Length: 114
Image (cartoon, rainbow, N blue to C red; front, side):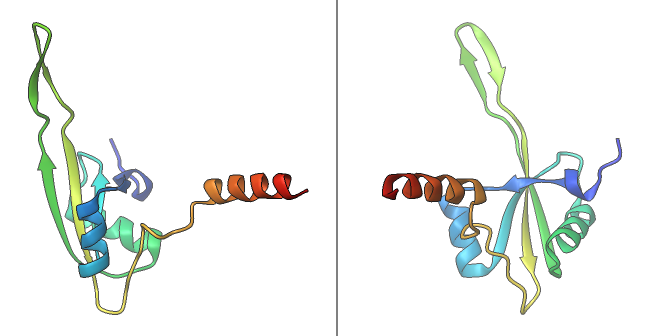
């Protein structure tokens, strides 16, 4: 399986801790493909967002074992990358405008006024 830069990054982690890390430390917390490694993640970030990457750290969160009725079930394993950008570069993934949401809100406001 050959990974492209579009397949490496699955999306941002949307949690309070990830938000604080992004705002205070200027780092990105991303969900990545299970087969991705540090150089792949760095290359994908640099090419997709036109920024320079200083450091990439990867962690694998294994799924928890639990019982569903009588059957043991294992949760999903997730691979995350914490990306540090070089000085002078920033990428705010939390305050980016959501195009779909804004267009729906503006249409509903226009229809109520007219």
